[in-house]
Image 1 (tube, rainbow, N blue to C red):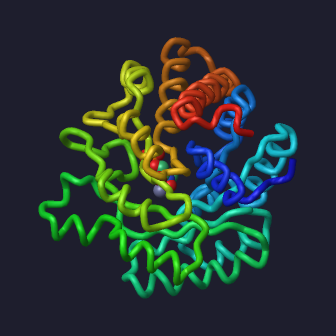
Image 2: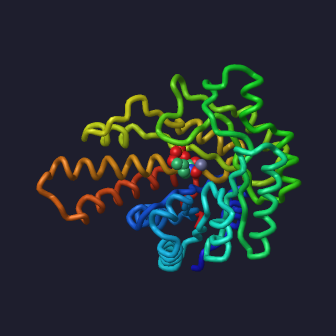
Length: 307
Ligand code: TD3
Ligand code: ZN
């Protein structure tokens, strides 16, 4: 099937109360691991490519690979620019085969964020692409010392209403205490679910959770057993992800867990077989590890059978 817009995938998820993973890719094996899991469980997926991924793999490679994956699998797959900031890259994605764009203006002030986000909506919508905006800055709650700092950093529900009305975005990334990478919490993991509830009550579009990797125990153990140094790595507990889905999160961004799974598999193969130099052996094991992680996400998010 041809690539679909992420809006199409997420409106169904919102109506039927589940979430869909937005998985980041950088190469063929990562993409194939994700698609293998989606095929097995008949799940839709959003494939995220960052500006860095486009620079690394090449624009045409990314678009061609993901189009092929959608065609061959027959699954609803969207190709989504993750954290788009550069307007030239955004324009290239809009005209070059992507079906969804994130414009990340979260580092700008409110009015500037609205201005650039609206600009991207006006470019993308006539071409049938969906657009994600972001309001609030990702930060662990324990790093926000008081109520004022918390309110200034995390997404304000009333501002979210105004942002969605004035920009016309199809879905909105919110900041409720998650952050990117493998070190999300120093102490106990905590999300601001009360804030998410309030946003959901006021904003009637699918909501997006960035920084949603869980750093699963088996993934961390495999990587560290074979020499990776990941002291203090901690992700969002699966219970918290479930609670977030119950409160309006429909798109869940995952990158770190894929990176760690690939790393652990490659490390294991190479250290157990120091004489091995066939890339199919270690990258193939990496691809299988990604399939396993994504299978767990599909079960957790409730997207199995929704393709
Ligand atoms: O947008 N992304 C993917 C790119 C972030 C770099 O890791 C996410 O929100 C994923 O977050 P996580 O928890 O996988 O780092
Ligand atoms: Zn993100």
